[in-house]
Image (cartoon, rainbow, N blue to C red):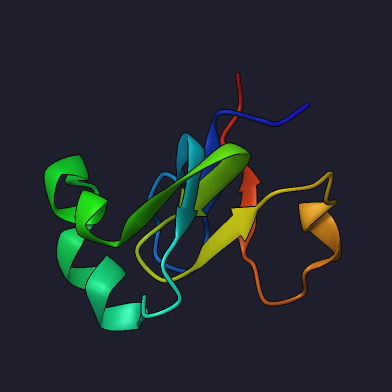
Amino acid sequence: RTCDQLRCIACDFRVSLFNDYIWDQSCDYLFFRNNMPELSKLRAKMIKKKGARAYACQCSWRSIDELTDLQTDQQLRWVCGKH
């Protein structure tokens, strides 16, 4: 189960999530900084992958294709934005 209200405390952006997609390996900080949260621009680096999920804020991104505890990733600064 995943919180759908994640917020990044580093860049103060809401974390977007995209079901059945992963991020292309060429993604970098400037790509997200310049294109978040515009889906039409983000699609340029999204790859369709059934069962996966792509997450991103303006400063961090992750592609998840198996059960993963995001709290163990020390580089992520994502917290629940409250429900």
